[in-house]
Structures are given as structure tokens and as C-alpha cells.
Length: 401
Image 1 (cartoon, helix red, strand yellow):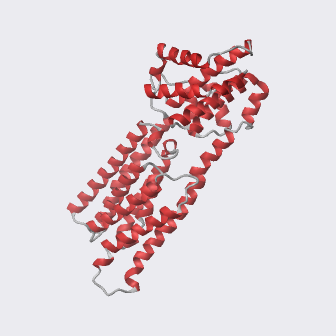
Image 2 (image 1 turned 180 degrees about the vertical axis):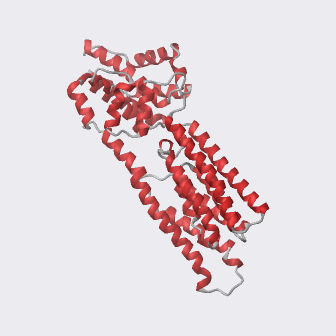
Image 3 (image 1 turned 90 degrees about the vertical axis):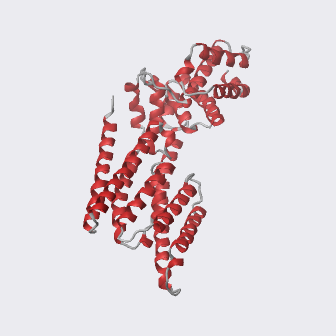
């Protein structure tokens, strides 16, 4: 059954699909294009938009890992940028092409979706601008496609600690060299300040847009999510403190599960912060004696958990029937199973001698025998890595006594 949120998103993108075709058609008519060019421009713009939406749908079907940052949970960001780009790509056809700040716009498109979508949609919008020009040519297209693609690669791994000065400088240098190669060298005029004025303005536009956007993106996207995770993954966070006061056994089970699950997540290259968060809070319903998702989700909503965290918690607490669960969920499941078994043993006899390796093998082998692994997206190699990671933590298990 399609959720209301998905229907709303589809309607938004359907509207953008129609708007792209209508906008290009309108500008082509206003510009006095021939009937053949009007038809060509409209058809090409529709194909470009359709291609982008097919790529977007494919990425969405592959889950959050197919998107940069948390864009999987905020598809309206890309929709808004796409709307603005439809307007800009049409408006650019009325100004000299050396004013177009496409290099920065390529970066914005990619950071609000993913690298693939950023490149493809960026190319599409440059094509629209060139087609709508009176004397558009392939040099303009190549110049901006190369500069934009290079900029996307330079900003692809943007993090909170990334120093943006170097990628910004390199991007602007590439843009300057390309403008020289594709434009200035072919100007049949004597070298003068006026000849370089437009390229300089272009570089300044790109620089201003990049600096403003990257600063806002860092604050409201990169840092916001990280900051919230840091707050709720702190053992002194109000919800965990309440668990410690009211359900001490559950609290320590969560703490120890989180430690092991975090070690597994680091070893397998999984989403560490989401794994830790799920370990802490998947049994928070014990505060009210409830376990179903509908009964416990208010804890996450009231405490403003990131969308990503809520998705993982929902998957772990009440997985959808027939859907393959993430490796992150398995990391938490294995850790909780082993920690719970150890805590029960030590509760009955703190001095009991335990062969940890044997117990780990027994726990993991039982999951294989019960065919539990069929429910998870995990390879045999990853499962064996989990076994090795658990065995490396032998010294830690004595803390549970």
C-alpha cells in the first residue's frame, strides 16, 4: 500500500515534469523559435526531466545508502532545487552565457540528491539553456558540463570537518581555465579588461553562491543531523536517564548492546550512529510496558529523533513483512542476543566460568540453523566478521558480572 507521503511526493514531481515542458515551450515561443525548434526543445526537456525522475526513483528504491547525507528522507529538497533550476535554465537563455553560474549549481544539485543525479540533472539544465539561446553552441555545453562535473567530484565527500577552501579554489581554477579555452581564446579582439570582465564576474558569482550555500548546508544539513545524534546518543540524555532510574536492567542491557553493536558497525563499515541509537532506544517502550511500534513511536517523535534513526528503530521493533532487514539491524540483534544471554548467566552466578568463544559460536550458529539470516541483508563473509569482532571483545564481557 502506497503511503500518503509517497503519493504527495509523486504528485510534486509530476507537477515539475509538466512545468519543465510548459516552461521550455513558453520560452521557445517567446523567443520566436521555429515550429521545429519549439517541438525539439519541448521534447528534449521532457525526456531530460523523465530521465532524472527515473534515476531518482531507482535511487529511492535502493534506500538511504543511494543518497548523499539524509536526502532519502527529504526528497522535497531536490524537488525545490529542481523547481528553481527549471526557472533559471530558462532565464539564462536571455543573458550572455558567460554569466551562467552552472559550476556552483551542479554542486547544489548533487548535494541535495547524489553524485549521479547531480551530474545528469546538471547536464540536462545546461542543455536546456543552450537550446533556448539564439546562438547556443556545443562549446558552452562542454565548458559547463566539465566544470560542473569536476566541482561535484571535489565536493562529493563533504563532511562537517571538511576544509572547503581547497576544493573551492580548484573548482574556480578549472572554471577559469575552461572559460579561457572555450571562450576567451576565440574572441577576435585585442586583450583588454572588458574581454576578461564577464569571466571574472562568472567566477565571482560561482564563489558567492558556493560560499553561501555550503555554509547553510553545513549548518542545516550536515551539522544539524550530527548534533542531534550526539545529543540523543549521550548516556546522560533525558530519555536514557529515565530508563536508568526506572528500569536499571534495561538500561545496562542497552548500554552493553550499544557497545558491541558499535564495534560491529565500525568493523563492517555500517552506519555507526544509527546502530548505536537503535541499541539504546529499541526497548524504550519498557518504561510504559509496551512493545508495539504504534505504542512506542511517540518517544521518538517527542524527542525529535532524526528521520534516519526512526526508520532504523521502526525496522528493528516492527519489521515489515517480507522486506529484507538491514545489516545494521542484524548488528543490534546479534549484540542484544549475546548480551542478554550473558547478563542472565551472571545474574544467577557472578563467578561462573564462561567460555566466551564457545558461547559466541553457539549464539551465531543457532541463528544460521533457525534460518534467521534469510531476513537480513548480510553476506557469509560479513557474518564471519561479526563472529571475529565479538571474540575480540572477551575482556569486555567480564564487566557484565
